Length: 577
Image 1 (cartoon, rainbow, N blue to C red):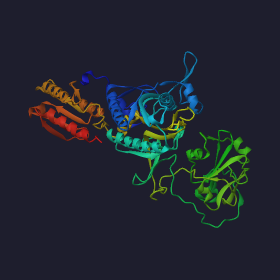
Image 2: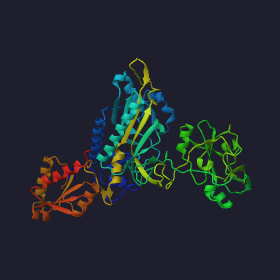
Image 3: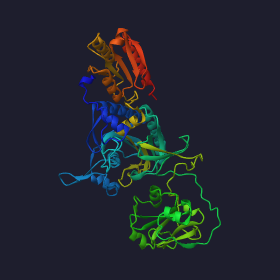
């Protein structure tokens, strides 16, 4: 490809709305262009990378016996009504009606669609297990799209779905899928991807893993053991090895006057105690409107996902003052002491249950209790770990301080079980002719997000540094002063020879000044660079550089194409797994 004919220009300045490295460089390098918030056009450079990522994904999915299909983006709402998700998923699911007034959706995920497909084609245990996958457009009506391709509304995703006759068979396949994902990320050149246990969320199921690319701009918080291997978990489900044991004799419960002191900080300062000597009351309203009363030690925060999972409810909302008072508590001065258990679900974190002589609210304006002790002053509540893990808390596996990192979720896998197959009657007949729901797994990768994450993982101050396996081109050929000393003819000859050898070449034939040309080359980020100039040609040489180095190697002009092709093949071999 000649740069003089290539669609897509380089931009000198960072876009005003770009906050992340990948957003800046993908726009400036001529890879993507914004159309609307969270919606992008992909330019030719970007398409070449996307095609290569998709090719790697296809190879790995086929390697684990996947069969490629293509399901519609537009789906009838009745499929989602069958699964029960049409009512439970929020506004991110785009709902509309067609010209016949039939309710429709834009698919943000395709569990319902694939179940509908499989139940029409599979009837017998003899046909299982199978895995179907697709690379398809999705639409998620994000309230706050951000970071370029990292959080968008319209995106391309590889989603795969496996169907099994037993949980054991699913688990075996799940491990194969996990290994395939690890190979995919290595092959696309991502160096800092970790697989972590995660919360299944709206997807459902019992076991799930997220593949996180460690990056400062990541939206997800993850906790890791210092060796980055022994323990890995998303903040939503992370636990620590903290133990809470009462170390002081129980003192008598006593009501004290705390005029106007409502927050943990105010009460602790007023009474001359530390935050870890206080108990914090947090209130939520469940889907049925019943008050959920949480007591946690004052130096901890509630992990709402843990609380939701314990209660088995899809969402939590903070309770208002009227709901709090209706249960007999006083906002700002509340505790579960004396609360009628029929008016609230009381959940106590082990941090509060296992600490002696806490300060808690007295359910009376301007008053608190000192010396609260769970077991004496409150009994029979649900004592459950619902605390958010903190950086430095002891690792549950190694006991060492946990590391807290930010990550971009580039893939996820779930053991779905029968969450979708059972309500949608996706059944098979066993060898005795009995009907059973198929047991499912699902496996997703965001293609555009993977591309952006590679940039976050591999760049310098001047632009991306693409791994050879997915680079838009393998060699960036620059002709300096093409009108002088036979440079243009030599560059054209090298370009033709490289193409004949099967090397992908981007030829800068524009005749721009060296500084401008090299600035564009850095911004495009192709890993290898060949430079033909009057100076090198006078020596019978072609200059060769790595994108990441300023050092140059001189190659004989007559052998340059062959040597460059060998270098490309050697570099590509690093990504063969």
